[in-house]
Image (cartoon, rainbow, N blue to C red; front, side):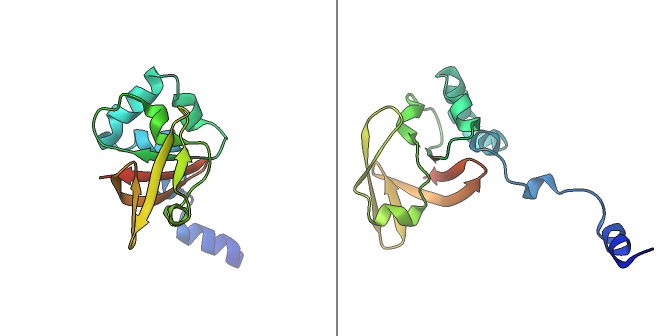
Length: 128
């Protein structure tokens, strides 16, 4: 048995699905805290956008959401990018104010809690 075969055998053949990158939609679907956001996105016809190939950024609040398009930006943004931006153009066409204070980002005056969750088609920032 070759060294490579021994190494592969000792490491196992499986892939830990928890460690594989997923689309924005699949990442949100995996967390029951964001079920309302996912359901609203699908009912508004935005589910396909969250699963599609276009790079985007989702600013995701907990709880009920009336207009999911307000929380989606068709551009990849890390939280550090908010330092230079005064606003971002949301999918619904609105200009949403963004800012950084110290090391904390804000989207439409909502504080970003968990930031820079990388997905295969973009980035998620979870709002507190």
